[in-house]
Image (cartoon, rainbow, N blue to C red; front, side, top):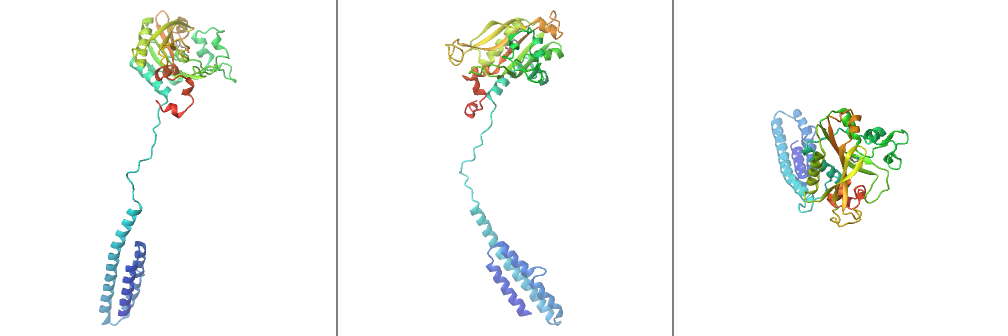
Length: 344
Ligand code: PHE
């Protein structure tokens, strides 16, 4: 048994020395030192030995186990260090390489423009309309009739307005003014409301016109609201949006739902007023329609025109964006060309 133990020890130490990685080393340990390993197999024979031999062989078996473990520990240490440095070498990082470029998304120039318009009116005490009071699919009543359009008004023609095919009175709204009626119908004055949204018109598309565009509607109704209030609010707006030095002008106009009515023009940014294609050589571009709310409209929504008055305005978001950002074709806002969109 002594020889067996000694031979086994020599073999084990030799194998441990030759192990080339940690896995192999672990296998060797199991082979010799585990519960069912070679050393225990030999130990199981100790009980059959003579009483004189037992302590000697027992002691030798323990020493053999110790020697194998010591060899194992030493080898483990070396192989472990080796495996770490192999790992470090193979997973080496070049921290000087440039990182992957991840471009940030940006808001669409029209979204930026609407947000700016809305925030200017917020500062003047206007609040945003509920979405439910500003639907894009609308009835003829809210888009036209309640706004004092006569039954034969040309805007009601199919050539100007998109009607739905299956429901005869439903259309895509041609103006955000429908939200005036819906809001005033539900809420008594005083009111100061701002209402941005999409509108649709059946027109030939050009550098200045698109079938779909955006408006921001606004209105104020209270006791003793005057045309002076309208001018004050809208001048404050154009001054903040375009800067005080940008020339603007009021022109008289007509809308069925306002009386008197005006339009505001802003000097063309493309040609600085000298006249170009974008402004039809006039040097000016119209940005909004406005006026004092017609007493007929107030009556329709059960607001007493003898007690209350108000003004309303509706501005074209694309126009405002074109004039502010010097964009000369409205279609650029809808083409989703990243080279255009990236600039804002
Ligand atoms: N709704 C009008 C348009 O689309 C603009 C407008 C709004 C005019 C409110 C007066 C008052 O042309």
